[in-house]
Image (cartoon, rainbow, N blue to C red; front, side, top):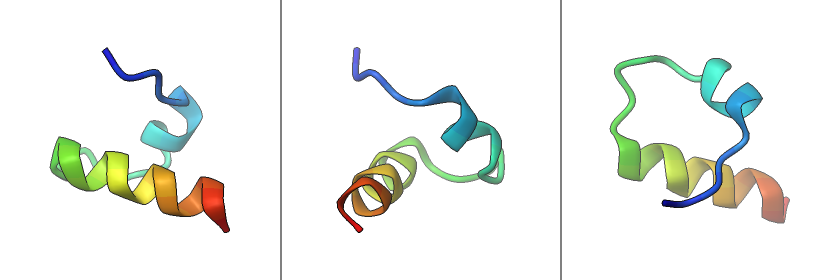
Length: 31
């Protein structure tokens, strides 16, 4: 299981695919 910030998930659309969500989180943490 990959650890994800619930706040980041909550701020995203529920319809966002899981893989896209992980990619988005990685991009946000890098920037």
